Length: 370
View (cartoon, rainbow, N blue to C red):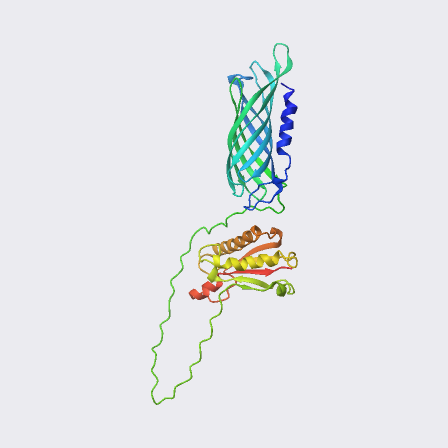
């Protein structure tokens, strides 16, 4: 039995070895191509093959290493170690189990924050115990199947919390393991950042009605009064997003506004922008990823009108800035080059007493920072 242990280790190393395909960057923002390394605390209900009913509980830990070949597919190797006191049983204390396994994982997309998964594989159970008749250490080993389910919750781009329930199925009855801990993702595509949806505001604020002031009655000029010249109306200011061309803002100082998305492109009660603003963001991405602009750092500042509490406006302003940053990162801009902040309602460019003024104040401003 012990001669199969090197064979299992060899299979584990081969399955988790880096491959050329695994290094290809993922286009969906997932963690495909990375290696996951985790350490989990484990509680076990031991198999009756080497335990008795009143001494089946054990505890220990599990080390796991997985290779994520696809967003929904991974291969995981694990090594579990458990200790049981076994007092008053045939197997006197201490009793240790060593459980190496190799499993296939089918999971929710690693581009998501919440990833349920199922695993199925095989391995070996190695048991060390003290035999009462000779008062000497003995060992036994047996092949097992490994099956279970789990949940992975991302709390950053490359770190996750895990909870897992598995069963090690072998002769003499199955063992059951409950594990929880943390894991990190290493290697894989450079600068990988998962795509996450911006957090919606906690409450939807109704837009107040627009009050149109009464118009004075129009007077008809007398026929004896010479007609007055009529001035053509001044053109309304453009509400399209403004972009400063790259050659211009390459030579401007830090703090210069290079893109403004005003209220006509920003929804009143949402942190996102409207689709017709994306071409301007894409134009900015092209400039910032060029040879001339790849070292430029920017800041994204979200603004709101004065409807609602100041704290809520700070939050929605930050959500608007965060949504822009996530979009730019998804298009290839490094996260280290983008700073976000919120001015809330504190920096209006128009009076908040009219619907037009409030619309102008709901805006996103992008500046050069270096």
